[in-house]
Image 1 (cartoon, one colour):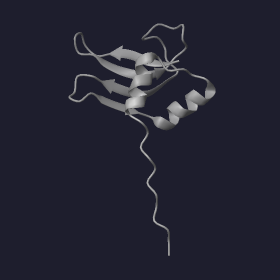
Image 2: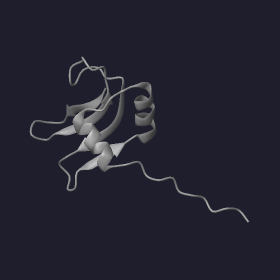
Image 3: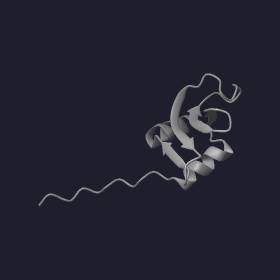
Length: 86
């Protein structure tokens, strides 16, 4: 499952987006960190490793509801087309 793991001080939330087994604790041992989410900035900052997320989705990992919303709001940037050599 791909979900949020809370880190940061009390009343100062900061989240890692992690790949973790579904039945593990929220901040338990994760398989891989695939991004971060900071709701305290204006606007909130989201950093994602799109290629790793695509890999884990292909293997069968599911998003939590919040991570699904974050990924949909921040789609992967379109690849830049290189000009054709003449």
